[in-house]
Amino acid sequence: IMAVQNDYAYILTGYSAIKKATNIRISFNDGFSATGSLKNFNEELDFALITVGLKELKEDERESVKPVEFAKSDYRIMGEPVMAIGNPNGRMYSALPGTVTNPKGIEYISDYGLNSFYTDIKISENGSGIIMNMEGNLIGLAKKDSAGSDYCKVIAITKLISFFEKMINGETIPYVGILAKDFAGAESRTGLSGGVLIDSIAKDSPAGEAGLREGDIIYGVDGVRVENIGDYSGIIEGKKADETAVLTIYRVTRNKGRELEIEVTIGDSRGIK
Image 1 (cartoon, rainbow, N blue to C red):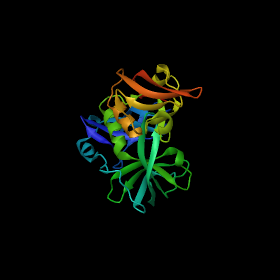
Image 2: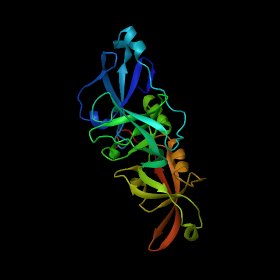
Image 3: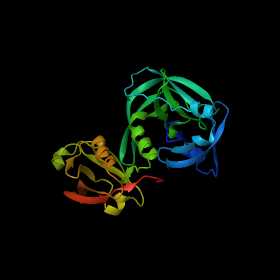
Image 4: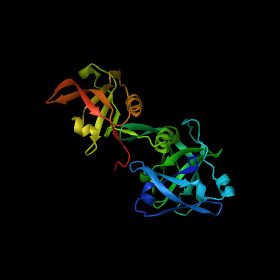
């Protein structure tokens, strides 16, 4: 349960688990259930936001519906004890203990770089889970493509909270449609340090429509210097759908490089597949 406000509970679940559902019924630990509705989803991250109207519940049932507490920081240390709960071993209401094995990582998704870390928890191929610290705070979501491995990659929660807030409030998550990563090593050729390198461009995305290409290096957005994926993501996230952004890029064609400015119209990641 991510939030409770305005007579609704907002519940996070895996999108792959409910994508083909025609009806959604939420069962609570206290023994009652309620009808759920899909409010929004992100297939790339495999999460869906479900709403439950609290008015259909009895008063004592409503009082028992409380949101999870979030960790205040993504900072982790090697060997920190953690717990996967949900159905990490493929059985509902199961839990698996573990430790942080690598506290620093990054998960690149379309237009954003998210903090991540690794644990020695082994999520089963038909399992999933959220990751808690020993104080009972939510610290991350198990990455779906690490299921069945000897490790578990975890997307840290704090950056995701801003996505959830936008979804809860009916706002869009700004979307350009590029998969990019921090870039270094071309200063001798371009005269510029840093930037982000475009690895791929999503089909039918604003990036593709604007004429961006794989291999382009983004050095600026709206005249603001971009040194890394964090700089780029921060600017894009501050935009709204249908607004425009001017990207300053360096493009190499036939071994010749040139700087270009390309205007792109921001899209909405709602329902992007």
